[in-house]
Amino acid sequence: MRVGVLNNLKAGRNRKQVSRVLDVLRRYRDVVHVETESVRELPEALVELTRREVDLLVVNGGDGTLQYVLTELLGGNDLPSLRFVAPLRGGRTNMTASDLRADPRPGRGLVSLLDALAAGRLDERLVARPVLRVASSRRSGVQYGMFFGAGMIQRAVSLVHRTFPPGQQGVFGAGVVTGALITRAFTNPSNGILTPDKAVVHVDGRPLRHSEFYLLIASTLSHLFLGMRPFWGDGAGGVRLTGISSRPRRSIAAAPGILRGRPRSFVTPENGYESANAHRTQIAMGCGFTIDGEIFAPEPDEQVELFADRRLAFVRA
Image 1 (cartoon, rainbow, N blue to C red):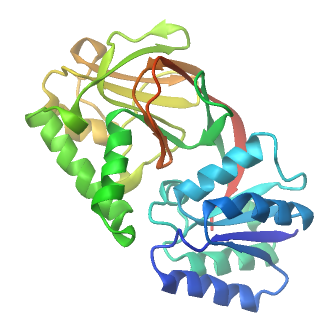
Image 2 (cartoon, helix red, strand yellow; image 1 turned 30 degrees about the vertical axis):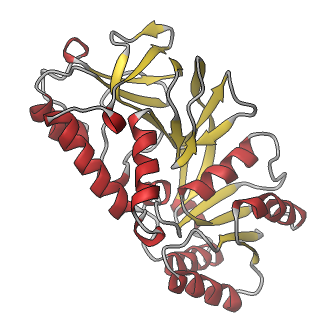
C-alpha cells in the first residue's frame, strides 16, 4: 500500500509540530509527501499524489485543509487509487481528527499509523463515516465536510479569526468565544453577532416548527470540539441537525443537557428546541455559513441542501 502525506505547512499550531512530522518523513523514505504553503497550492499537491497512485492519504492540517481535500476527492476530482484518508491533528482546529481519536501529537500519530500498517494492523484503525454534501442554489460547485453551522456560528468563527492570533484560533479561541456567546445568548440576547437568523428548514420534507434561530448546526461527527455532542434527534439519516429558536424556553437550564446530547424533558420543539437525523435537509436563508471553519459569506435568498450520502473510510492516526 502506497502512503502519501499532504502537509499544509501554514495550518500547524506551531513550527515544532511541523518539524517533527518532517523528521518522521525523513525516516520513512518510502512515504510520498508533498508540502504546501497555502490553499492555492493544494490542487497541484493533489495532482502530484494522484500521479504517485496513493492508496492511503494522510492529511497533516486542520479542519479547513481536510474540508478542501474532501471536496476535491468527493466532488469528482478523486484519486483513482485512493482507499483511505487519515487526518492528523496538525491544524488549529481538528474536530474531525479528534472525533476519530487521532493522537494529539501529529508526528507521533503518523509514526503509530505507519507502524500499524507495517504490522498489518490497519483494520483496527478503520472508521467509516458519512460526509456532509452541501449544495447551494447561489454558489457554483458542491462542498463536502463534516460540520455545517449557519448564521451565528459563521459569525462566531469570523470573530475568532479577527480576535485571536493564529496560534490561539483553535480550540482555545473557539472555546472562549463559544462560551461567551452561549452565556450571552441564554442570559442577555443582543443584536450584532447574536442576532437571530431567519431560516425555513425542512427535514426529509417535514418543516421545522420555527423559522428564526439562534443556533443551526449539522454534522456527521459524534463529538464536536471540547467534547460537545449537541445532537439528540431520532431518525436513520446521516445529517445530524440541531436548531435552537430565537425564543427558547428555560434556556439556561437546558444548556448543559443540550451540550451533552442528553436534553431534559422540556427540551422539545414546542419550547424552541429541534434535533433530527435526516437524509436530506433543506434550508432557505439569507445568512452566511461555515463548513469545517471555512467561511461562506451571506447570499440573498439562498437555498442550501445537506446530504450525507457519501461514506469514506477514515483511518485513526
